[in-house]
Length: 471
Image (tube, rainbow, N blue to C red; front, side, top):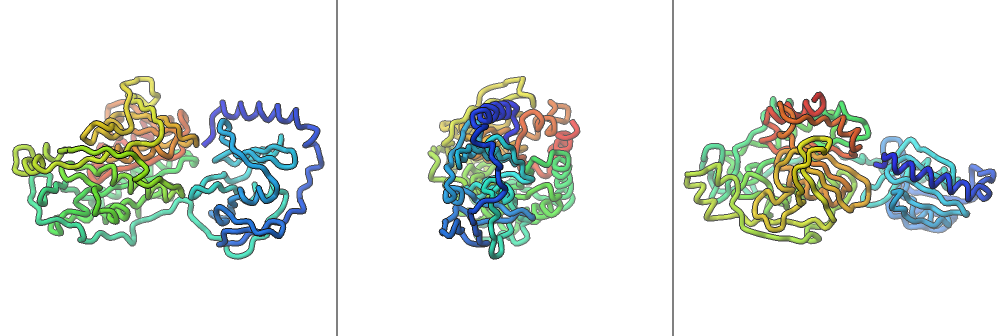
């Protein structure tokens, strides 16, 4: 989202110069209509422009009461040259000697020196650029004729897991308990539950955060099941999916829940959880992140597009069961850790405070040579900040415990700036972190609150979610 004073200063200076240079050519009567005819068809991937068929990049869509158009092929068919201004983050339009700008992810169109502000913003949906119909009409000076039913979509889909159930396809042999860990063969799993009371308390905390943040922020909640949800024997199954469903059913309309259970279960035959560690793998995090991007209407490259490094790893469960037979089983049967490296340039740093004044250390997105879970963003730190060469101006804040570390590695491929906040490192007598003040500081677009059942059930994390507003 473009909100920086420097940007607007540059734009207004440019428009002032442009106005001076083009005053003669743009000082016409600016008629409100033209002789161009545009016909749009609901549910179809083509339009008619002045009697000619034009194939579209995306069909017209409706969100709420607003219709949106993918304008690129239509503009070109109307004799409009198109380009992109990287500095201004704007689509550049040249028609009839007038240069215009549609500012990406805003409601702003500069048609020559004239400013037009729609009530709705432009956006990208499924990798296609859309503008509201009123902006299209203003620029083209023609009112399209729309035939047929326009598909009504929710830009952010709300999936409450009503049709999501976990079967017995991947359940392991009978489990033996070692304190807080179940062991089935050589596969270790934490004993975790999400009770109704915990689910409601957690949802209330997430709602409180959402209700106190500006409407401009898109707020998502992702609850990740632990390995036992898919691999634990039926005798120890705790139905975390039911607990996650209760959380999602109690979220306010300001929060978009992301169904990570379904894509994880669909890929449960792959290496999506460690056997010797209580975390998921980066591969598992990829499938949840891909679902998140799908809800946003954006795409993620396939796993094969990312350089892969592997190694041998014995994780946290060996420590949890130290001195027992289970620990020796884990040590004799190490995990293979996969590390998918980012394809974008990233610069990472850790800070001890929300205003990034107390610098701690530099950090990498993925450490190619570290065979442990801290390979992902360097482990748990108060505030980890990444800047990337993804040139879309989008910013995301991820509130997390350690499961969020692997998730965050994927966000570096879709955002210009990524802020990872460990919910356990602030509040409760520790450093202050206030999401309202942080919004005023960096103007983030998306907020993701991500936890696994251990985090959902943590009274400290629930308390800190409140402190992120009140602190």
